[in-house]
Length: 191
Image 1 (cartoon, rainbow, N blue to C red):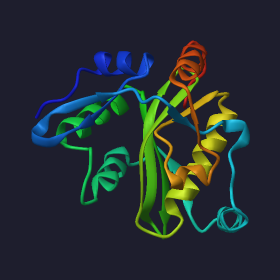
Image 2 (image 1 turned 180 degrees about the horizontal axis):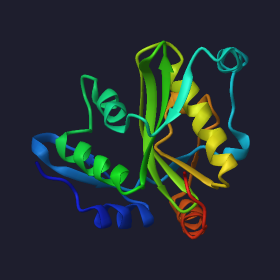
Image 3 (image 1 turned 60 degrees about the vertical axis):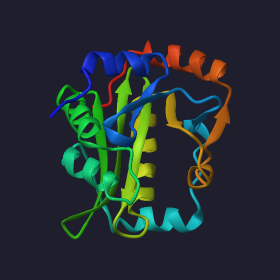
Image 4 (image 1 turned 90 degrees about the vertical axis):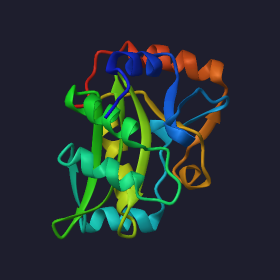
C-alpha cells in the first residue's frame, strides 16, 4: 500500500496545494483560485443548529477515531479518498498534523470531519454525517476549538452551497497565500 511522503504533503499545504485521488489511482494536485475559507470571526450558525448544539445530544471527541472518520468521509458514490490518500492522512495523523473532530451519538460515531493543521492554519479536508446534524455539530466544535487555540485560517478549499450557510467565502488566491503565509508562521498547536 503506497502513501504520499508526509513531508512532501506538508510542504504542498504550506504553499496552498492539496491532493485528491483521481481515476485509475492517479493523484491530482490542486490550488483553486478563488479559494474557499470560513472566516473564524464571522462563522455563522442557524438558530436551529444552535439549539442542537445546546442540547448536547452529540458527544464531541477529538482524534479518538481518525481512521474511522476518514473512512466515513469516503463512504459515498464518488470520492477523492482512495487507499493512497487514506494512508497518507493516517500517517499525518500519527505524526500530529492531521486531526479529526467527531460527533458521537449513543456511543456510535455519527459524523465528523478531518483536516490538517500547520501553525495557525487548519485545512479542512472532508466531513460526513450518518445522523442528521452530526457533521454540522462537528464543524461548530472545530471552529470553537480553532478560536480557543488562536488559529487564524480555516481553509475549505472550495466554497460549496453547504459551507456558505456557515459563512464560507471565496477569496482571491493572492489574498489566500498572504493569509496562509501569516497563519503557518504562528506558534500555536491544534492539541
